[in-house]
Image (cartoon, rainbow, N blue to C red):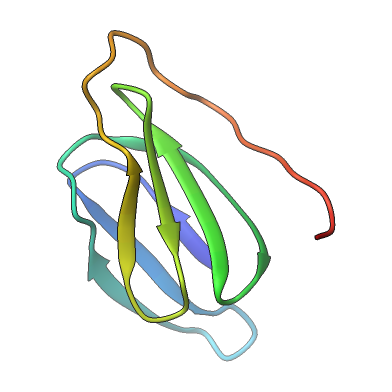
Length: 79
C-alpha cells in the first residue's frame, strides 16, 4: 500500500501488517493520488502536473512539477 500527500513524503508499507515506512519523494509538491498495478510499479500525481514512478525501491520523476495545473486522480489497467 502506498499513500501520498503534502510535504514531499510517501508512506509505503503493508496495510495488513500495519507497518509503514515514510519515504522522501524527489519533489516537494503536494501529491494527490496514487495508483499501481504491482508493488514495484506505482505512480503518483500531484501539483504542477507532477508524475512520479515507484519501482519498489525508489521514486523517480516522470514529469516535473512545472506546469500550472494539478493532477488530482490517476487510473490504469492491467499491463
